[in-house]
Image 1: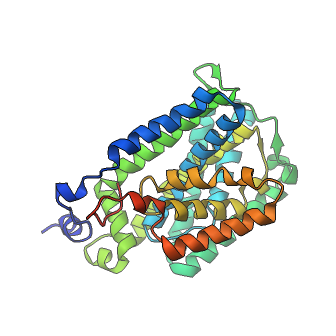
Image 2: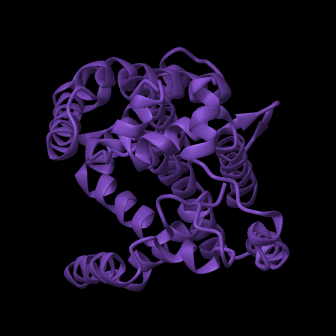
Amino acid sequence: MQDGKILLSTAVPHAPPAARRNPWALPGRLALLALAIFPLALGKDFTLHLAIQICINVVLVSGLSLLARAGQVSLCHGAFAGIGAYVSVLVVMGLGQPFLLGAAAAMLAAGLFAYLLGTVMLRLTGVYFVLLTFAFGEFVRLVLLEGDSVTGGANGITGVPPAALLGHVLDNKATFYLLTLACAAGVLWLLHTLYRSPAGHAIDAVGENAQLAEATGISVRGTQRYAFTLGSALAGLGGALTAHYLRYVSPESFGMHLSLALIIMMVVGGRRYLYGPLIGALVMTPLPELFRGAVETQNIFYGAALILMLRFLPQGLASLFRPRGDGRAQR
């Protein structure tokens, strides 16, 4: 019997079709379609701004949740977004290349750093891995602060050009929203495909029980490095989108506060669910606007939300829409 077949039959059991039928599937798709159209139909700059931020956060949190499904938590996801942002800006502004090439370079750079870092860091697990990711995040922030000649130091880089596709400059919120919406949808489709593949089954098996997965022939370290690399590449894409939307990058924009905010979104939405990042981004992204001018209140609310979710709904809001009788994460 092949190891892959052992994995699929033990780590990822298949429920009967009746048990796996999700009554929320059609209403959920219709709701997503309505939510996607709503900002364009309303046409207000503030609504489009929130929608853009939500889509970017979906990209960022999706990358983070991929690693979480493999059983690890990273505190340097914001740093990888920062790497992507700066690489994209330098490619576009410094080398005069188009946005698509800058975004591709951002994903490649973030993914390459993650691969090299994961080769060393993923030898550790638990709190030791988390502490190393924290240290790397601070290292990246300090490098960006001290690299005045390239990164602009604490002042960052201003005058970042808007994204342009096929000769069309996306210099208004409506067109940029369409770009971020396409990126968010593309990332969700990519992960949907991945989670249904043998590689996705391996990621879930490692996240559920690393020792059992290794006993069936799965390379735990290799699987986690794959998830870390791909998830960080998605963070690089999110960073590139952020830079060309805000038209400005600075080291403080991609510090520890961003990594923690993304973790909270992931926990609130549901780390083991495909649509968990979407739900978390929808719920948490608008909150800073509600608490604008009261940062302390905002932080208290974030902390309270995290504690309540871990205490009463540890699987996240997405678990409320799980089909009855289906104990598996949505794919």
